[in-house]
Image (tube, rainbow, N blue to C red; front, side, top):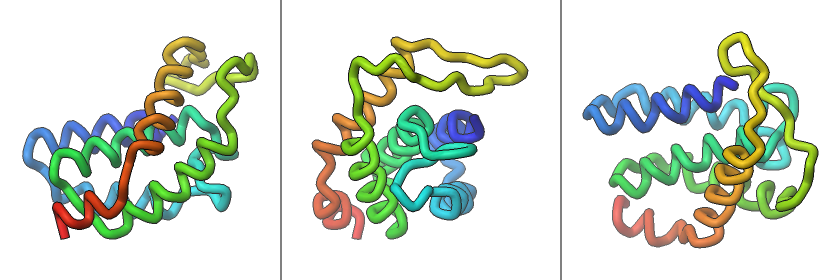
Length: 131
């Protein structure tokens, strides 16, 4: 999934003080967010949405802000809450390199972490701190 590598790169770039490429990354996320609010290569998936959400929230909590992030996260929250199925056995395998990869417990942890973080997220708090 390009979202996994992009989310990790966004966090690493910010941590190394290289914030300039983050705007382009947010632009890519905005361009590829699905109408229902999730992200995914072929269709929205909770796992790929979780990667994008956790990267964006990590950056916001570290003091980085872009006005495009709030609506992206609001749509993602609606999608994750609507699609949450904690005991579903239908997790899709994603390509990591040249292998299909589907670690169910790790995938569920990402989805649950992103969903819980978005439930606790308050857009006004971020905008007041950074606006």
